Image (cartoon, rainbow, N blue to C red):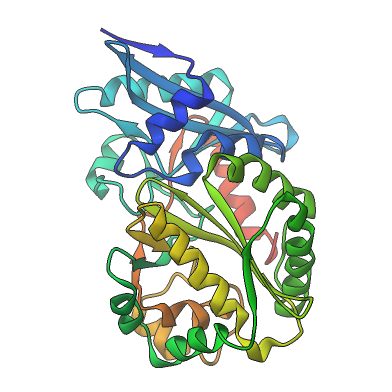
Length: 342
């Protein structure tokens, strides 16, 4: 008999880690990170014969003007055959219990659902995504020389250059996070994009790194911080979520060196794929035709990410299920009239 349980953090993360589509956004710590920044969290787990067999981490955020809540299901759920209806019923109950106007679901890249499956469940294509729907996925299951051979010549050359000139690459501790956040502010100002406050990255490190789900890599040269990257990994995939660089000695190509260090770490953890996490949501022909002329949004990082020999992949995007049609109509109207960047 299957029953709904309240899992412990350890049991939940063990369950997520064992899934073929294990994702960092379903780890317990991701929910706690989001809880600290205005979201509420519920983990719905189904147990059968003493074993967790289905589950999902749901995030909730209040809508303006007391219009209820928005629910968000990122990169899940996980479910064994025969328990689909029971899990989706539990998710519906959770959303309704919290006065949810709608749920936004992003199944992710590895989801087995096709469009017909999503629509049968009552979902419709959403006008808004939370996570970038398109990314570059690097196969890191091969030896290093094969991985390097798939890269473009410029990226290979810059990696080799980054390993010269006495640059020191090292895994950072909690004491090194301020160095990273300083470079994040520099990067955001230089490239005109928003970054989180320092406390966000500090909390992310404290939640994920001690458990082995994240690593901070830094590069310095003769005392000058050059670059940093915070990478997350669970199951067979690692994600490059946060990266930064200073304004000094950029000719030493340390941004390539820290990325290569992160790939080596991901391989050591048994990962077979490295997700560059976020490129413009355009087909590959458009990406290649425009990347040298554009620097807005994610175009500014595509030129860097394209050279690593990965495959351009698009997820299923975002899908919404509506519980309150009037509030959902107001949400769609707000999206249409909002200003860029809101």
